[in-house]
Amino acid sequence: MKSTSTFLKMKKEREPIAMMTAYDAPSAKAAAKAGMDIILVGDSVGMVVHGYDSTIPVTLDDMVLHSKAVRRGAPDTFVVTDLPFLTFNGDFGTTLSAVKKLMQQTGTNGVKLEGGGRTLSVIKRLTEAGVPVMGHLGLTPQSVGVLGGYKVQGKTEESANRLVEEAKIIEENGAFALVLECVPRQLAAHISSLLNIPVIGIGAGAETDGQVLVFHDAIGFSDGFSPKFVKQYANIQNDIEVALTDYVNEVKQLTFPGTEHTFTMDENTLEKLYGGIRS
Ligand SMILES: Nc1nc(=O)c2c([nH]1)NC[C@@H]1CN(c3ccc(C(=O)N[C@@H](CCC(=O)O)C(=O)O)cc3)CN21
Ligand SMILES: CC(C)C(=O)C(=O)O
Ligand SMILES: [Mg+2]
Figure (tube, rainbow, N blue to C red):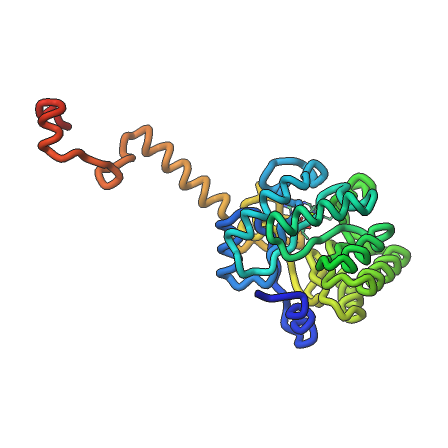
C-alpha cells in the first residue's frame, strides 16, 4: 500500500499523482486496477450519486457507508475520505469523534477537510493526534453559500496572496497533501513549487504535482456536467441509455429472455408434474 511518504517521494521525483473519487466497491476496484495512486471518497457523492444540488446535505454516516464500500473494492489502495459539512468546524471533541468513527469503522487511510482560516488549526491538531490530513483550498464547495456560487478562486492579488499564505500554513500544520480546486494555473504552479507536500489540482492546470477528478465526470455519467476543467474519458451515460432502451424494447417484443437465459426442468419430472405439458 502506498503511504504519505510515497506521495512525498513522488513529488520529489516528479512522478505525477493520479487521484480520482470513488463511492462504491466496483468503481473503487476499477480505480485500483487502473493504477490510481489515491482514491478519494468525496462528499461530491451527494451530488453525483444521491442527487442533491450541493454537498451540504451529506452526512458523516453517508461518508462511513461509502468509505466501507470503497475499502472493500480497493483493499490495497490509499483511501482518503472527505469530512462532510460542519463536522470539523465546532468543538474539537466532535471533530475527533467523527474522524475516529471514519478511520476505525471504514479503514480509510486519511481525511480531507476544506478551507483555510480557523480550520488550519484543526489540521494541526488532527495531525498531532496521528491522522493523515489532506487540505483543500480554492473552490471549497461546502462554502458555496459564502462564495456565492461555484467560481474560480484566487483571481485577485489579495485572494491569491491569501491562498499562498494558507497553503504554507497547511504544510506547516502537518498536512501530507493539498487539493487546489479551480484556481488559475499560474497560482497553482506557484503554490506547487513553494510547498514540499504534493499539491493535487482540479481545475488548477498541469503544473501541480497531481490531478483529481470526480469519477462520474471522468466517465461521462454526471448528467452532462462538464465545465472547462473536466475531461470525459468515456460516455457511459450514452452507453447506459442505449443498453436500457434495448432492454425495454426486447422485453416488450418478447425477444428477451431467450432460451440461453432460461432454466428448464427435465422431461421425467415434467411428465409426473404436469402430464407432459410443455412449451
Ligand atoms: N460532478 C461534480 N464535479 C465536480 O467537480 C464538483 C461537483 N460535482 N460538485 C462540487 C464541486 C462544484 N464544482 C464546480 C461546479 C461548477 C463549476 C463551474 O461552472 N465553473 C465555471 C466557471 C465559473 C466562474 O468562475 O465564473 C466554468 O466555466 O468552469 C466549477 C466547479 C466542482 N465540484
Ligand atoms: C473534487 C474533489 C476534490 C472533492 O472534494 C470531492 O469529490 O468531493
Ligand atoms: Mg469534497
